[in-house]
Image (cartoon, rainbow, N blue to C red):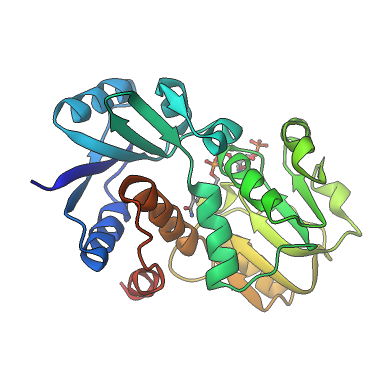
Length: 271
Ligand code: NDP
């Protein structure tokens, strides 16, 4: 019988994860089934227990349950511990193991799909929520010259920078304090694009040849990518490759195989 996996979220109807993992299974010959499961807002832990009782082997976790998933795990990988959030669960006789593959997915997309250099580069990370927190460890592992975290609530950026200070050069500020500073890679990890909004960036934050990356994805430019384009940035990417990358990393955690991602990403782009 096929091994069972799922993604928990609320809402979950538009998740691309079942299509991505089903394609990974076809491409690698792994015998798995993967479904989307709507967990009630007050019933995530019960939904996980039910899935384990039905024989589930693992699950992805998306909005709004990543922090609850972190608290529910019996064991955590070091990167999940650092991120303070879990997007990948594995179930075995020792209990629930929590991992976080979001940051690895981002870095793989930047390095492999976009051929972006990160080592010795100046990185600006916009936002200080869960996605920014998950990204920081894997980004710092690439040894950039510096990462500056800018956030609407500057105190949250400062707290995050303090948390990661031992791993590399991390600074923090509000948006106005970015005036006069340029960056080689600017990553939007805010949820501003969801509301059609953009962080208030002063002109000049995109250095010559900079890459603008929005973790959000969709048809056409997100508001952040439109702003970057209007400021003359030519290298632009949304976060669809990050989505496929985090899924590939979760597939590796569960199955020990790295699925090919580029064909899956290309198919999603035209669907
Ligand atoms: P959180 O709710 O944890 O954090 C939201 C962040 O956005 C905070 O820093 C918040 O600032 C900031 N923000 C919200 N609205 C605005 C605004 N109008 N102007 C400026 N800043 C704003 O969200 P997540 O970190 O979980 O997610 C962030 C984004 O990343 C989402 O768009 C999500 O879809 C995307 N994402 C994509 C993934 C992928 O695979 N491609 C994976 C994970 C996330 P403040 O602290 O001041 O409130």
